[in-house]
Image (cartoon, rainbow over all chains, first blue to last red; front, side, top):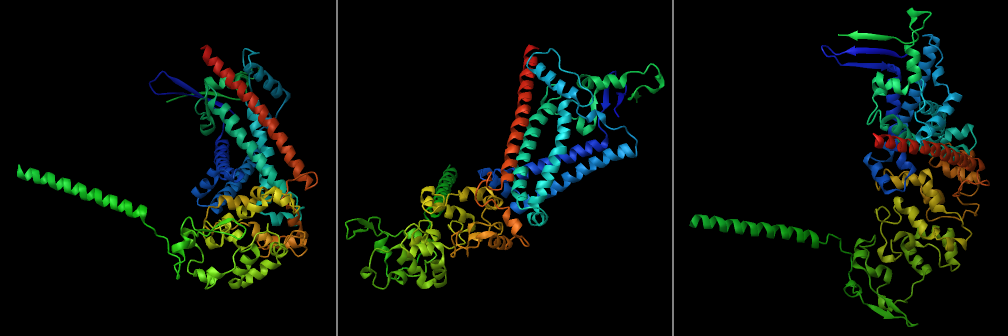
Length: 256
Length: 309
């Protein structure tokens, strides 16, 4: 639930308003996912491009192939655990904390429309970019891509780690299939994250050079209004009929 | 004044001494020869290390009789005198060694290896007079020359584990040569794409790191058999599974069936691996293509916005 907090710095007129976008669990989940992802990439890439001269050098920096393999496997376990943590977090929120189902993450037709509206804006066919709710189509894509990527990567990685065990219960072809799937899906995830995710979340003009919101959980109000206009409007709209409930979010003024 | 002059002289002398010392140190490093000296009881090398020692063979071809001192000093047999192989009257020995006679020569000491080699596909072909095959020196010397045979555990040795695949590739990568024997698979490339090849390629030269399989771990060393030979370690799923089990404890025939057989996956060779690869290629192309278009669009628009400001 987004809450909007307003903090006045003592004796100063400057007022910096921040909107809370992520809770502490989401911050931890992203941080652990990010660190394990980076470790998996830097230890996995030399395997993919093993004939490149730099790869052997890089593996030796880590103290040899058994070390780099241990880091790769450990990071993989961490990544699987953080994904389970996220599923438990969602389930706990809904079943115990009685939070509503996070409908705002579910892709809809509107997302496809906005994709094309945004493209139209980029090529100059629209004057203004489309307005987004809590999550724009890119954020939804990033999120749901993990639901595809994690089973593929963890499943194929498990087969590659324990090929003898896997072929006791599965046909032999799972090993070459896992090999090709692991390698290709890894390149897809790596390329997407390092080019598209990083560009839109850190290099776009409003946030360059680093968008801190996923690490602090907070977004400046000005930016929130721009980037999540629909949600902001929804949060701040005062319900005429039930004025005491003030819609979903709250604006609180905290002065020192 | 005198004192000052003396001090200047001392300075000059010390500078000269210091630079002389430095030069001498550098020179001794540059010109030092730390190589061991090969045993040469009859001073053969005093003539045979000359660059232009050569003789005309019976059919009029000039043959160099030069032996590289550097090679024999580094060689595995550097403490075996020349006459051990070349007889005590080398100038009376029959000339023109063949592949066969040279291998036999090695076999006079290395009896077991020679015997095993004669039973291998290379050795059997050799006995039939095939000159293409690998004999002792083809794998044990970087120059395919008996004088430069080096020990297996030397980093530069063609038989050092790190280098074995490349050594086999000297012949097995020659598509024209291999076509004569019906070996159409690009064995080296497929090996380097595999987990084993990648592990060896990334492992550096430390022998404790080089624990992945290379050619010889599956195909044998001196006793390499043709894959068509039913007694070969890689012939048929049962033999292959036994070979896998040497490292992968408990691997069964199903495990061995997952091996692509040095070929790329294709509609005929583990088709599902081929179609999964096609699927992922398509997925990557479409997703990254779409992402790339959006990214380029954003770059153009954001740059445009900034330009207009």
